[in-house]
Length: 89
View (cartoon, one colour):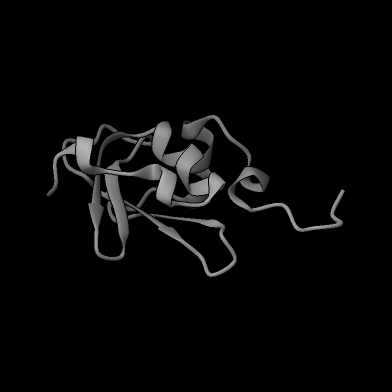
């Protein structure tokens, strides 16, 4: 794992950067990022964070936490994981 100071969330979309800013022990990997899952007492990086082709934030806890539990533990809404489309309200 890389040193957290090497993680550059500014290279990600706004939704992903917002998620990464709320996580602990973030590390860049080839497919995105890993971090401690905020939905359970995590001693290792079990949460994968990726970026969809449309800029949305993708979250998956490998320890089994539900998507809804992870989003709630982050204190955000599901809607905030998506980029705003032009012309959208």
